[in-house]
Image (spheres, rainbow, N blue to C red):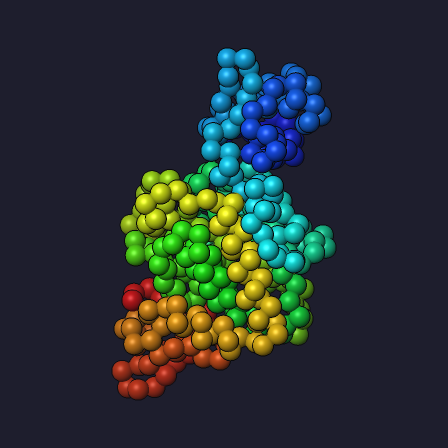
Length: 330
Ligand code: BTN
C-alpha cells in the first residue's frame, strides 16, 4: 500500500463519479472537469488507483470506467433503496480508512447528526469486539458505521447491540434469501459460519449518552476469505450461490435498523428481545462455554434477561446472567 500523493477527498470524488448511477463511461476531460483537477493530476490519480488494484478499465479511446461499478455502495446507488427518515440521509462513502468506526466517531465529535453514515471499500485497521481485529477484503464487503444519539440511559446501551445484530440478520435474509441465525450478542451466522459482526462504541457521561457508534461488517461477495478467519467465517455470495448487491444490502440494513430503533426508543427492548430469541437457535437449551472478563463459565443457555444479558443455567441449577462476553463453544 503506497502513500497517497494527493488528497483523499479527490480519490473519494473519483469513486463517487465512476461508481455513481448517472454515467458509466467517462472521458478524461469530463472527469478532470468534474473533479476540478488538471489533466496531469488526473493521470496521476488514475495511475495510483489502478496500481492499487481497483478495477479501473481504460478504453482504446482513453475513456475510463470501473468494473462492477453498480456494486459499489456510493450514496447515489444506495439512496434509491432507502426508505428511512433519519438513518443514512447523511452518507459518506470513502475508498479507504483505518476504521469506519473511527471516522464516524470523529464526525460525531464534530457534531454530526444522528443517522450519519460512513461506508468504506477498505479498512486498514478494522476493529472487532473485545479488542480483536476485523479483517475484510477491499471492494467486497459492507464496512459501515452509523452515528446514533439515543435519549437513553447508558445502562440501556447493551440493548442497542442486540438490535443491530437483529437488523443485520433481517437485512441479509431480505436481500440474499439466505437463512441466518443469531449468536449472542450480535453475530450473524449463515450455515457456513459467521458472516457479520457488530461493534458498538459509546461516548457517554454518567446518566447521559452523547452518541453511540454502530459498526457493522458483512462478508458479502468474492470467493475467499483471509486465512486467519477462513475456517470460521462465511461469505454471503457463496451461501447465496451468486453475488449479493452491496448497495441494496447497505440500504436494507439502514431501513431495518431505523424500524427497530424506533421500536426500541418507543417501547424499550422487550419487543425486540422476543424477535431476537425467535431468530437464534442457540439462545435456549444449548450447552455452551462463555468467556467473560477472563473467566469462563460452562452451562446451558436459558434465554435472555430483560436487559439482553445471556442467561446460563449451571449444572447445579443456578442461573448466571452475562451482560458482556463471548460464547466460545456452542
Ligand atoms: C466483531 O464481530 O468482532 C465486530 C466486528 C465489527 C466490524 C465492523 S466493520 C465496520 C466497523 N469498523 C470497524 O473498525 N469495525 C466495525
